[in-house]
Length: 338
Ligand SMILES: [Zn+2]
Image 1 (cartoon, rainbow, N blue to C red):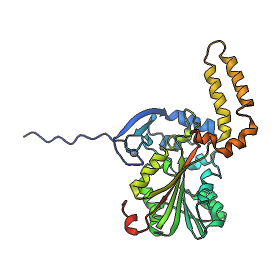
Image 2 (cartoon, rainbow, N blue to C red):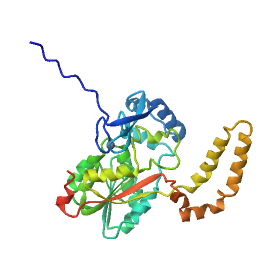
Image 3 (cartoon, helix red, strand yellow):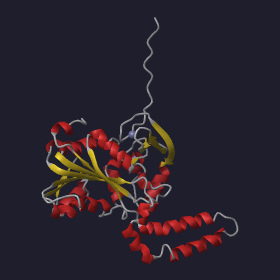
């Protein structure tokens, strides 16, 4: 009798962090890890130890894939930064920014009687911003240094992970926020289920992510690569995510485009294109930039451009996108996604 062959060991199929589809992605391109580490040092002045670099370099290159099911772009291998990586990155004088556009967007949507949880609250900047307009502003933070810094400001902060927190705080909040968290995760749906678990029926979830369709992007942005970001999002995947966990999308908002960026980049882009024309290109490029700077892009027009939102209406998108979801009013509806 023919001996039974052992089952062939199956190659690991890349799995989409949003919809979970395995093996249904298209290859886009690769970014060498040594380029990512070099740019983190050059552009962000981040100093990493040899050990952190070694542990967070799982391959020669990070491959960017496109999920054919939901359209998310994600990296393979899915190698996320650990606490040491974030501690060393946090030592960069440029990394930490206390203000985000979506803080204001969410605050406008909160009201006095609400209990609000900010997951991944960092040093508590958002909590400090909403403290006076809600009943309770609570934070959860995995990084113990950041949690201690938030507590030192007199804010209510718990240091720890979400799964355990959600277990102890079922249906305790009217709104739960997570700013710039999901793009760091290998699996987003369980995270969102934990967030939803902390919500009372009818409560709201606010998420924000960097907008992949933003107007200005450099060819390689090291913070938009692993181990920092594992995925790249557009509004369509935020809708899909809501469907997957049984949360209804109430609204999605894109940050207004930065008019200063447009003022610098449109003339520079035209100049770069003109400069490729032999002989007269350099001259044309210089003059067209000067003329544009003095007419269409002069400083005095900036506030009018911002007020009118003309560039946004022309399809130029800002750096971030935020979504507001609602949990179903009845328990039965809320559990549907489980
Ligand atoms: Zn997907």
